[in-house]
Each structure stands twice: as structure tokens, then as C-alpha cells.
Image (cartoon, rainbow, N blue to C red; front, side, top):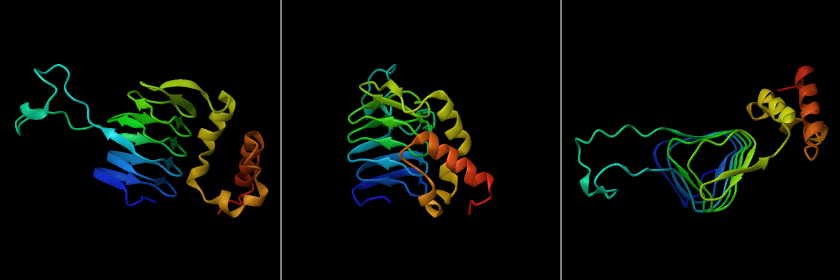
Length: 173
């Protein structure tokens, strides 16, 4: 769901079950089940720091700008209010970006980051759980909707185990 207060510019895709409350999104691919808060800027342009000026007065049609890199937001990513993500950055699956952070570098899966520039505070889960979640790719199927009562979402270890069991039993729709 993209709310009316969101400006979508250039090549953007927003995958299933993701929502954006307000902000500007440019040249970005957003995965499934992302929660994107208010006043977020994704795909913010970089100014040339090695030219005479950083001001656009010097730009013209013949400038050899490199094409903008796609900004990639993985699946199940939570982006807090007032976050700025610079163009070309990749945010890993399951990451959380704290409010008012500025993301200038790639963020690994399941990292919790905050600050200016954003730095890793910790990871959401231990390495074993992260690897299982990345292999499981729960967001690529709808089974968690169909079997809600069979999965303890509040206990990550049980949830991973239960989802693996459902997949192995071919109960996945």
C-alpha cells in the first residue's frame, strides 16, 4: 500500500504486502512485507564532491553522469520515520533502520541500525536463526496466512521450526 503522501519517482517497484506512509522514493526496488514510516527519502541523489561545486548550476545535458544505481530494500524491512537512504544502497532482508537515520552504506540482513551515518547496533537474531530465515524465505509464500494458528510468531525459534515443518509436510499452499 502506497499512501497518497508518497511521491514515487523514476523506476520503482513495491512488492506484496509492503506499505509506505509518506516520503519520496526514487529508483528503488522494495521487497515484500516492508513497513516504511513517515517522511522517508529512499534513493536520495548524491552530489558530485570532486567537481567545482556541488550545486546543480554546472549540470548540462552533456555531462557524463553515471546512471543512478538501484536502491534495494529487502523483504520484511522496517524503516523508521524521517530516514534518508542514499541511492545505490542495499538493505538486507529483515533489517530495521531507526528513526532519523541516514543510510550511506549497505546494511546486512537482520541488522538493527541507527544514527548519522547509520551504524549497526546489533542483530535481531543469532547467526543460526538468521541463516535459517534467509534459507526459509517465508515471505515468498502465503502459508503463514493459511496456518496462522499453527505458528507461534512470538517465539522465533519455534516459528522457524513450525514453518519448516509445514513446508516439509507439503502443507504449503
